[in-house]
Picture 1: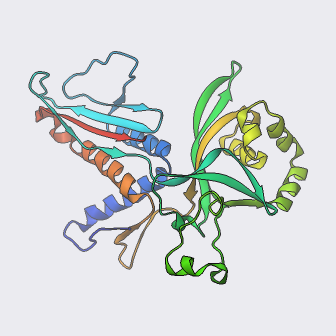
Picture 2: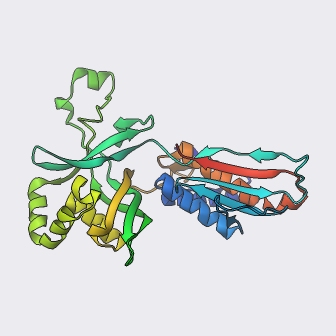
Picture 3: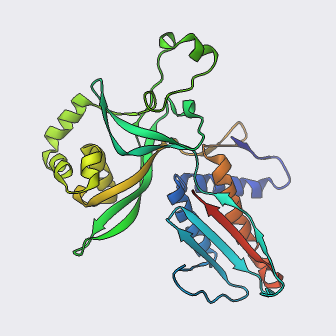
Length: 306
């Protein structure tokens, strides 16, 4: 939760910023989506993308950005009075990633008549807060397209709550869990429920072609992930399940970020520490452009992901 003051003299402008920040948060579900949203904002402000494989021809007053792996981005603007001999740089650093539960490279898991997802913790998360939430999926998918079978990276987001990590009823927990706090074992207690084996068998009967296409596909995704999951991604991206080569996905909160509190003074969302820094760095760079012509420094905002 982040608080802003809705009754200050700058309340109208602050309200616009808070609303815009919420919009950014809902667009930046993963580090990949964060980079794409930052790119969109930069392009709207007149920034151009640079290719690290080519020689850069930079001029005073120029505004540019480049990215790596789709998960890191660096934007910069060159002051109009910049001198290669005497000028320096002003840098605001951030990072695009946040603690989350990522799908394992082989995520298929079935236990006690339930279809589940194998996950691994990324970063130092407060993992107990992931329980009893409506969870979707988001990330990057590697897809084979065209007659030549070229590989393309596509962003995907499933906001439908397709998964859930349920808590036990209180009378089934241990005294330590109730008194000292619940610290889940991510390998045994965090795999989310995706479907029951019975419902999944009925799905296979209704979609024999789709299920068979995934299971027999000569791709890693057809062997390491559940056919219904691959089929869902294919339908979301409007591609064939057999064209999905691999993917890097994480669980996401299906509940969108919003303003809350009696006077809409709180920003309610996860990922606030990291995405707040990305948003503010980007907006600061963009909003500082009117004074760029008289500046001798390079203004840079690198946002990275390990």
